[in-house]
Length: 264
Image: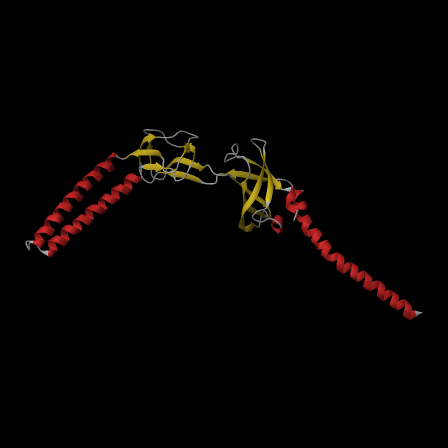
């Protein structure tokens, strides 16, 4: 009788173990799938809209603003001159350097002909050749300075801010004009570090822009390589999808994990 009871208990324990072994992976799987769903129940996360490209142009050298070619909000193409400084003094020095270069070139050619007639020493020809190189280098210096007198759009974009007016003097390092790209805007936000378990490039978020009240899907593109130890958050970037004509840099809103995040 005792043997039968022992066998019955052993069979019951084995059956329980089998059920436990079968149910444990299912429980783990269900827990893993419920992580995004749990994240979606958290409070929305604030985000800031930033341009795909942004360039604050500043003065390299001081001068006076000669002309402003654009207005606030204008759409400009890459290479367009936005603002120019009055660099007439540099232009005059460049013209003088050009005259010196041409004179040095003539002297070199004359010495080279005389050397062919054995009427000039090789040293004289080398000295005139060096003078040609020197004056050519001076012209390049003035060309570089003249290039700094023009502020050119580095990419296709829109004028976000103009800091100067015509006739205004600017000092080296002073801001002149700000340009933002016309590409798809991005959302920059700090999300809880607990989202790292499912958050990766390609994950989707739902965004509501405060200024327009519109909802937009976001696709995560980049994750920071470090978690902020104090706030236990990680900074990420995400691209807006769909029509973003009314979404401008500087806007803000709230984002939550998309409902489809927990699928798959």
